[in-house]
Length: 308
Image (cartoon, rainbow, N blue to C red):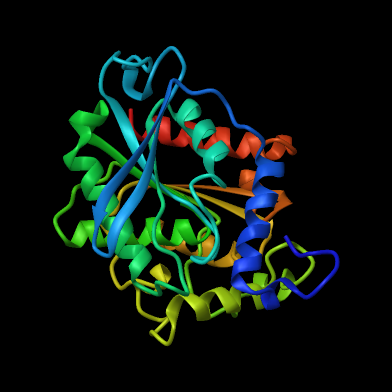
């Protein structure tokens, strides 16, 4: 969110912005729901070790009918990629979201601490995301997961990484994904849609902040490349069914809905859900806003259905 005092968000130094994001997340997210188990893991990635936190859900039944208690059977698994403009965000900041998603979906949630820009610009985060999905598929048995029922999900910049990863895995021979859940995803680097003009300031994520995130992430790379801007991909056919959540008061609203339409036009089953009374970032405000809890529950239900 934009600070009430001090410099505009897009002018705050990265280290300061990261610290502020962590403080805000702790207050707005709260302690999070109880889950059956949380495992702290580290996997080999293309640029070094990648931290992964795996959440096992509470509840009576898992997606597809398996038991969700520890030892109760193999569960579907969702690789989750957090938001933060490819620059901010940690496993801790999105811990409440992942706990709630695990319980709502009846699936294991594998939250990925991918490398951040500007220290690690494009395509480092994308490379880590693909490595994480492949690791999850390869180690499904050790995790108590069903390697056949795999999904990917993410919010904002993480939604961008999830969308691109789904397409890259299609092109690279898998592992195949059953479902993708994209929460107000970043889909295009052009920054020129009506929602950028309508919501460019005063609604949390500003147009200037998004411009800065793109600059830090790309570090001179071509933003029109489909691995950066998934809306520009030539072929979206054969991708997994999608749930796309957008927010009306968000610079990213139009591009997220354009991506949902592009998927649908390519023959991909899509559910689009727009939240008219919220702003970007609300997905992680679980301790403060009922609409946030409702959105996470809806996303979890979409994952549950898609992985059944």
